[in-house]
Length: 462
Image (tube, rainbow, N blue to C red):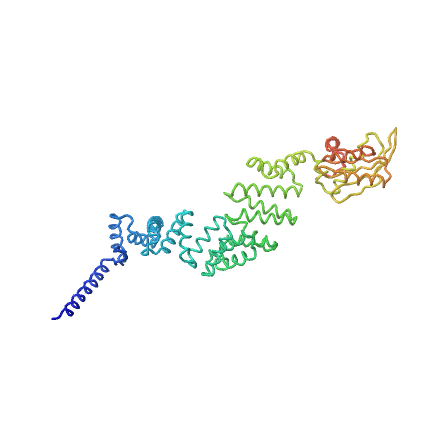
């Protein structure tokens, strides 16, 4: 026999031995891999776990065994074990051709997200995305993380890509809609949110967000319809009531606003800041309805929890006094007819023991009332013009100049300009050489306190 046939026979024997070795390894649940290390490929889960544990006992960083352990934990949704396994794989296996780095980082990131570890999740998913740009799970979960990190523009970009991959994924649509809302792209937000609602009609969070979009777009009727529908919801009810009440308050439908705010306050376990806002706006509605006692009570409740909430301290200073003085209430907040009746009473009593004849009354909107009266005393007689200004603020020079012109037009001998606030220094300087007296709040209060309107029958009971 020649040399060549012998060599051929030896080669055949060696090839047969290699094939036999591979087949035997496969039966044992292993296949050879680069560098002589082996990855577990067994179909029998129990055998694979047993072999993985055996290998990890001798080498805690055995990537093949860790990958197998992670895969089993992933399938079982045992997120803690999956996270620990893939944590080692992504760190020790970086750059290793044996490791599917995309899958390892994706699963590491998602497991971290499930465990409430956003920083680890973000890191893993970002690395995964560097390997593959169009994976739905990576884009969606990374988009959610960017939303939670308040990086809304990044969230929009990622979630758009996720929705393009799975157009009927309701959660992705919901997050995309909310991300659009945060960047004030209300029309785009509404499109995504309505698709989410079509897929999941019971998705009240998307419904609430859609109502916010309608509100921002000025479609108040549609917004109000949804907010009113959600007022009874245990979770969204307080906020929905707040929105509904605010719309009604701005529309001057005060009875409806009060009903909305009171429904919101009936809910249990509401955030304290939401309760404070509901009470604040309910107090505003009560003031519009001239229910000052109710408003003061609500403002006191707010201040007991939040001492410096908005302008509550200044409102309490203002309305506590009003609540204790009926005539001051009428002067500042009463109807025009009641206000004029009160002013008429002040004019009649301003000069004790004088004979007073009122000859003209004129009203400028809800700003002031002018009363022209002939005054006759034992020592003098004159035509006097009274102007009553409905304000607790500062009256400036322009208002006083206007009053002076009116005095001249009517040929009155003197004018009395009366306010529940104060006059500016410029206004006071203007009248120094003119026959005009400026009457501020302190003097007005003395006059109002001397009037028992109801007992005299001058003012109607309310």
